[in-house]
Image 1 (spheres, rainbow, N blue to C red):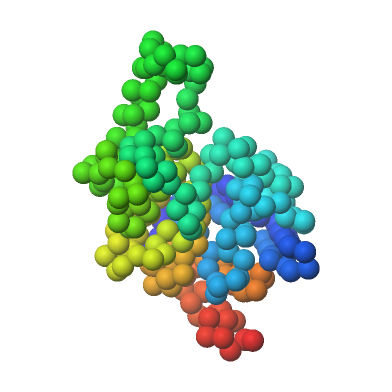
Image 2 (image 1 turned 90 degrees about the vertical axis):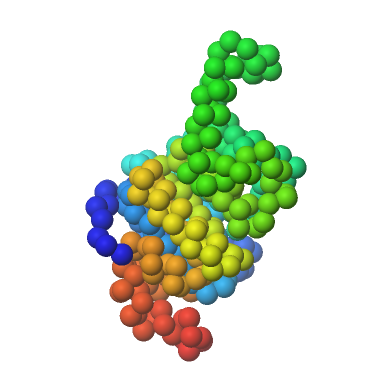
Amino acid sequence: MSAKKTGDVVLDAKNISLSFGGVKALTDISFDVREHEVRAIIGPNGAGKSSMLNCINGVYTPQQGTISFMGQTFDHMDSHQVAVMGIARTFQNLALFKGMSVIDNIMTGRNLCIKSNLFWQALRIGPAQREEERHREFVEHIIDFLEIQAYRKTPVGQLPYGLQKRVDLGRALAMEPRVLLLDEPMAGMNVEEKQDMCRFVLDVNQEYGTTVVLIEHDMGVVMDISDRVVVLDYGKKIGDGTSDEVRNSEEVISAYLGTSH
């Protein structure tokens, strides 16, 4: 990737340890994320990647360590608080409303932005109507950006998997996040769908200026689109650096080839 300007550290995980009963999911993990970068978290199955994202967005509470976001430090993150602060998340298993249309699914991402009270919302008149029109206009821009105009009114459950993933991304973008957490956004996709999703992730990063933290199994994808990569194996950090640095690390190579265990 060509060099681009990244900013100060916006997200900083320090000494994160997480256990379930006697099983250690994460052990003393530290890494940071800089503004405007694409930061990948990679590792073999069971390495602790999703657990790390779950600590960042408040699904899990680590037993040790802190997470700092925009200069504020937390022993644990609260899911609602995380969203309000500007961290959005897509999930490995799609959590879309299958019977609702594309536009209505993406509109759910605007919930945190709604200012009018429930009374005005129920009547859909006056300030509530004007506000909804503004939100719908914002969502229409996302639909154009993701090139899913033809499916605006289609129930999401009727769409192919690759397009459902795009809708999931759109819902996260509707929150106008400062940091976007993507949990295997290309899992289960064919080559063409992966290429499209790569393009959208890069466009989100470059055109919206959104910082992206990405879990992905496809090493080609990771090396193509990431500015820096952190590598986990059995819940421990075994690599952290640029794509080239990680690609040439003997410890990382052995973990992926299975020669370290």
